[in-house]
Image (cartoon, rainbow, N blue to C red; front, side):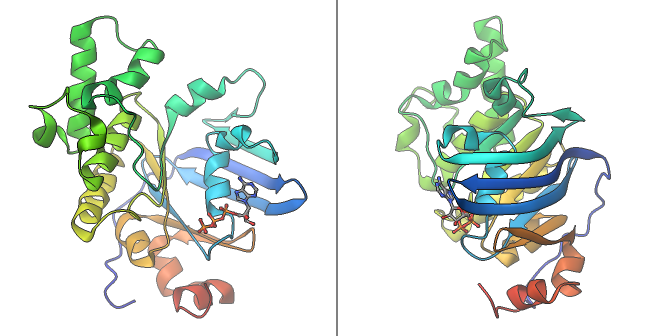
Length: 264
Ligand SMILES: Nc1ncnc2c1ncn2[C@@H]1O[C@H](COP(=O)(O)OP(=O)(O)OP(=O)(O)O)[C@@H](O)[C@H]1O
């Protein structure tokens, strides 16, 4: 743990999303048990824990991606800005524009770089003219630190970019709908160390605009990019708190065992 550079910068204490008594079942498999957690505004929150402990399952609860899994059942309350995101009046497609997601493997659409980024604003009717759309595409690519590398080939296929560039394109695509929360499920696991460092730097910049929640297997990464950390084990949220505290003075012996490499 000596090489960890803990992110100590101040965080907003305003809650953006909150989960209360969340349980998730896949058929009879009780995958998440009674999870309570707060996602703070303009803060990076890392979810860590051994394989199969429920990190991705919980992440997918935050934008109702589990709705697309036939066997999944979500119980409990999840609110964003005080509104129940599972309320019947909430349109999951609209919700996912506000709570964007970036996956483990970069998954650009088989379309041009421009169209990958323009897709969300188009389907959500966020722009009125081509000039406005051009502006959103450019600003999203800038926010994803990709503009300079692609500005001269916006009509080229997104799938023709390098892995790291594809992942930043997926981040630009998520950013283009002006999300309030960005969920990232192991976003660097398919990237080399240089591309990983670029994405980590980007995550730190993005949190000035919205909340970021990242699932990671790398404790070094959690320590570098996050201000809050939640440790999951066997479907339960064992400990949640300030990242520095979780890594240097965990309260629960299971957290201590995990961060010192004895479990997981
Ligand atoms: N689509 C699914 N259908 C059925 N069961 C699932 C599904 N996704 C996850 N599970 C089960 O839910 C539990 C939690 O899995 P989940 O993927 O959330 O864990 P994780 O902590 O993200 O794991 P990893 O670090 O390996 O990605 C596991 O028992 C897993 O088998």
